[in-house]
Image (cartoon, rainbow, N blue to C red; front, side, top):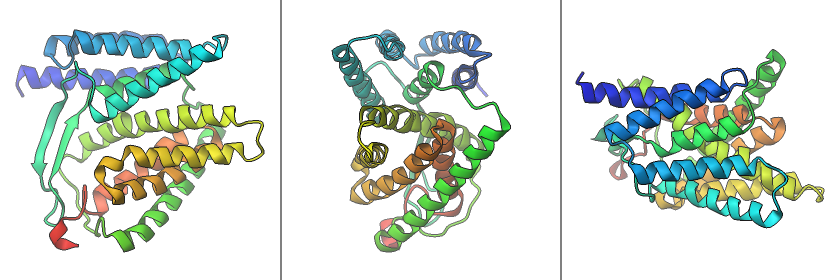
Length: 292
């Protein structure tokens, strides 16, 4: 392993450690120190530039201010727009200053699947860190975890059922069990960079805030659940109509797990279980056109 590859892995490992520490009440401050160290290494390695660092600072300030309930409503709305814009910019890699590390380039994980390209992205782990640092802390009691696991499994089963039903019509994937060599790094990336970041934004932030805004309506929580699930699907629209429909259905299940628990962990785990089953047991990322 070259020194550059080692430092690249070190950068992403430090981001992962920072997220885990920042999610706790006890080691929150240490998480910030590790996150800062990661950014220094990222700058030195060219994973981000000064412009990227400025975006990160702005994101941190916005999320800090949003936690201050005393701000006037128009400031709150402005901050929400900025936060939404940054997250969308991160999702589609529209913001300058970030250089993501390509791990795989058009590799076929199985004979019937489309080629798969995988990056270790800088942006979403950064969003995930600020979300857990300023947001709800990870559950610590056994009772909380029993409830979280219960509803995350229910959410997974609902999502899996809906997706299999949709797949019978859309033919997006086919049964294709495998254990790729990249499974371990894929799991870490998927759990901390994709599932945590996306659920923190869509369920932990949007669904929570919209539920609060609609609290005077009897069905406000369910309206928020439906609207955010649709938005989750729309974000996946660049993948085509099939991806939009599948993501919307999955979003309904993830949002339901969050609605029933009020815990981010439930949505994250439901999301992760769905993606893990997809990765290990079905065509990944999708079924090749010639096999449909």
